[in-house]
Length: 410
Image 1 (cartoon, rainbow, N blue to C red):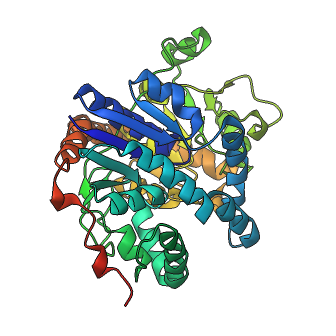
Image 2: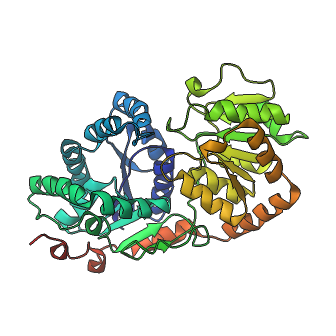
């Protein structure tokens, strides 16, 4: 069996799918190591994975705070630059590279890496001449990288080449060509969810949503069970597991539930993001296994993250999406085109508009369309397909990175 080394960064939506993938690979007899933030150590270990942390608990806590600096890069470019220097510098990448190669110690090693941020894994695959499987979490990731190349390509290539020089690797001509050099690239959404990204210069295989459940929850709180099994199905409100949401997100969602007279289940780890007072019909929980409770709810109001939206699609639950930043607006557009969600950009984040949107998506005709897509998701065999695609690369020279000499500067 193979030695699978998985690398990823950031928050639940970027990490939990890889824990699920690693767990399935482990069941198939492979040795699996996950390298990510220390917060996920216990989850990974519970699934039988070996684990290496990028950071300490304090460093991880600080990273979550610092992620807010990314929220508005046009208005605050200095904050974004500080963030990049702190978390994406040459020194950081070299430390990560050393951690990755320490686990690539057998000839049957395959690297599985989240796109763009897993620079260390790409460098290790090139340096050690081993296969790398690139994983995309959302459609806009490809679009954003094409845009980066158009706007900042020369700068990005220069930064990359400084890093490559430290590892005695030859310089490359194009940052995008290097980022798209893996010969096995996987997209964690079905082909019907979004149009193909024609500008992306490589083949990408759609495998479906990597639906996962939070194994930390054996039993739900009794008061929550009452709400879920009562006569009135509640609305779930969540802005994901990071703080990269606008400050008015939760207060407006709560006000929408109050004005519409609906029960609400609000899920966030961050009490400081909540309004000072919650209506009696809205209950707050730090964490819940959302995919387990979605089938008992009337709607989901959320930020547009792939993990949340895929769970809602699988459950056949209508969605009201309030996206801002990152992949979320594009995800919301995809949902709206499918006719299973309403999408409100920040300019329309007003209680009366949100109440009307919530009324629209909870109509029976809207919910019936959501059920059609739930059936589509139930037919997918995502985990088996992902594992087969990874296993195909083991000891297979066809899946080494594209000839780097073609990417090199003259």
